[in-house]
Length: 132
Image (cartoon, rainbow, N blue to C red; front, side, top):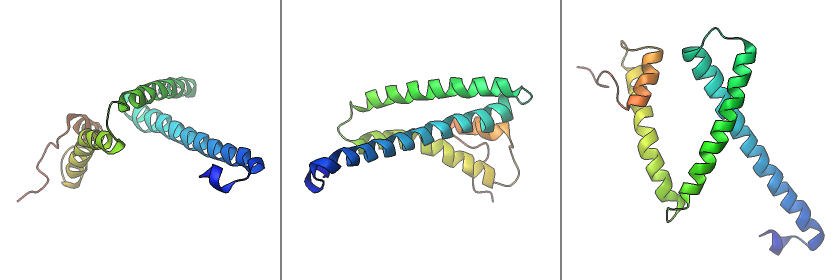
């Protein structure tokens, strides 16, 4: 599309803008991933009373792990015929545990804190979502 609408002098600027937009989006996703892991999960549930230097190191480790893990996921994504096949597989594994955790939290009495996180990994709520 850029080749069609931009003259040769503007084509470089358009490609630079697209690359900058992509890099900004990826940087935001990486930052969000390591922030959620470090502060919302690791600091709250795994190691609550560590120093700031420890959390900074954990954030760096989470960044390297996240980039490596998701890069390998992209490589494995090439095996699918189209993006929707891959997304349906991912949603099958991700949405069911999140929905079960949501139902567990909405049930009123029941598990709190770490138990909700365990429910998410377990893929099922501790109590039925609908009580009589």
